[in-house]
Image (cartoon, rainbow, N blue to C red; front, side, top):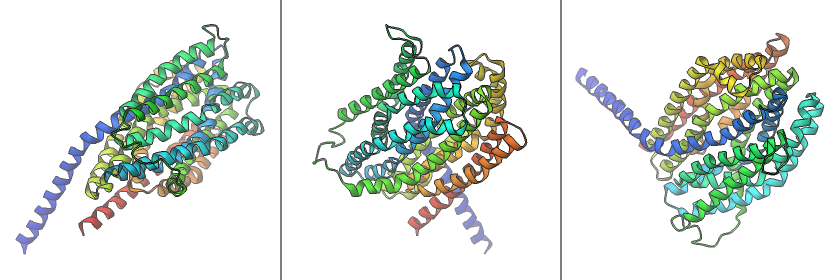
Length: 467
């Protein structure tokens, strides 16, 4: 009897070691896919950071930074929701590519482009209403005077942004990732030159100030979409792009929306809570919102790392499920989650170590720096959990579960985190720090919960395959 028990224990120990070895082997292909996407996400975020830095050199830096902060937050709340409606591509295309069905993957691409075109007028109309709503919200007039034309300029970039997003989801799901990285890195060069020309007035162009940054971003997004169109055409033979007749399929569009709407809702809930906090900080005055924007830029920059890894997780998990390898999906998801956790823990250490240096990159205003440093210390506490929740969301998307992250975000941010932050900000007079403490608690809850959900779902799937 004892020998039988020892045999079972040895088998379990061997299986456990084998699982960990296979997980370590999974790191390499995950990194190969994730790193270009991480650089792409960093390139995406860098455009916003460059905009903030360059308008921060204008005479009234606190107002300029605050206007860009508020305008970017409000625009992205709407535009990224629309982009999120296309996230069903991660599931449909990666599963199709995993089973080597290139025609089905192409069919999803065509209908995602149609969906992007249909969404554009709706999103443009919603964005146009934001400045009017902000006037009723009590935002200071000096911020709104700069923000209004900035948002108008951004609004012209909505269609190329959605087209870029649709093409990107398809290309990364079929393992064509280098053009995505190139598009975003080179778009930063376009944006820097555009900012230099339109903000300060060069090459015969008059100085537009803050709105010039919006026009520069619009130009950069047109460029990004054009690069991905070129990449798609370059790979047209390998991907069987024109092998059969292209057709609009409203059932496929409905399937994309069925997967994308919960994912878009999750993004809206997450981005919306940060935009709401930004709007609340706008009520506190120019210095608090400028300090908030600096800390938020830093946190958003580091967030790009797990966001890129999350895209890789969705693709790798989807490929494995497409070929019927559920244990492979387990390895792919956990390798990505661990990778994201390591990077974000390191980012938290950086926030604690050099907060003043980070703030000085944006401004020399002493009061703005003081607020930013305080918020960076709070941000350091949620970096690890931000990494966990982001990558776990991507892994769950690869499984086809886009609803659970939306529900968890709703409860953690809007039912718990934001009300707590409001109380700490106004009732206890902690200002922007109180709002950030509420966000921190929300992120801790979201990260912990989604990792547990992933573990439960993927273990159930792997067990079902073994049975």
